[in-house]
Image (cartoon, rainbow, N blue to C red; front, side):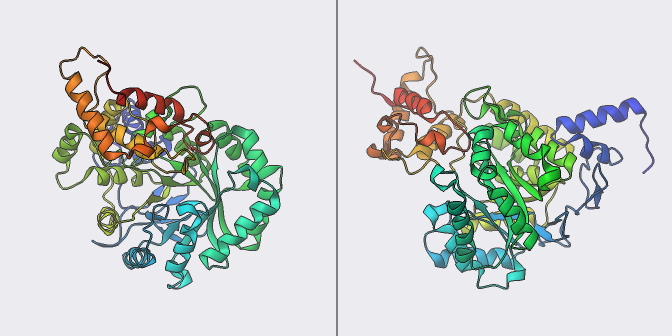
Length: 467
């Protein structure tokens, strides 16, 4: 298309697109497109000439797919996260059958999910279908130091094949790298020879694509990408949503621990031509359970779209996203998400501007950055860690949290209401005051949250006021 703007105006448009959550390479590729048509249904070219799959499906009601860079595989832009599955296998089968019938073909699990049961449940459900009809992803979940010896980790790897009932794994990940820094990474994967083994497994075809999922210290993320010429990562799984795009460093409740905003993570992958698998597109559900004023703003812009659909659309509109994971343990969630991605309606610049303003406002809320992944569970003292944090965060977003200033006119009313609701929602044996500050949960939290510190804050808020 012939350019109609002068050079200065073109630069301003690029800066505007970047501000709205699109990388510089993507912004440059969109500068010849109309100002409201940020992403089209035509194939786009990235900064190194790689082809990005069309955003739209072939027809109304058809799933949107992305093309895997290395093999040309068509991956559903909606991926099924198998972490929070129903307990009954029949229900798991029903969800998997419905997802496959409506175009979902990427299923993500891990040995540690569901107390070690979800790989088996995933395998039972998927094995009832032709092997070529789905792509399965699982992980090397050797976060526990007892699993660092090579033979122990190799046993976990081989068990995944047995549980999933497959003779090759489509997408295999080093699970949750970043926590514990480079020393932890090298102990888990480098010094014991495990990564060399996995590279050989990829060469042999038992692993089709090798990548890693990242949380925590960005030095680990950078080190793995700096050594991409050695490892040739096929994909990388990151946490990305419109709030973490610029405000991820606040989610842990402390600064300086070395994490990075999603804009940086996605940008580095984009430059290297490595596609991203996205986890926590709704930030643990917090972007689906927004305040009334945010819900009203979104409804005015697109009256039929739920807050969850807005969150998914924003993530999936980034062209180097291979698939967007959603933990769909209820049929109504699966059906709503299928509507969002069948086909995807990409976010416009106007949409992105609205979400950027909302993110700026949400970043000022005193929420706890828990995504309710439950990696910290079980707590040996019985505390429901994600349950406590979820209750607190919901009170924040709904405006029910008592303000710290006890002179506020509604302070006592809110304090009493909060205390009563807390006691009704959280059983006595699972409340924050049962925390013994043992530190066991800190080593398991992928967000590296100061859990005991947050528990102390919750205890103070729920303590009876002395006469």
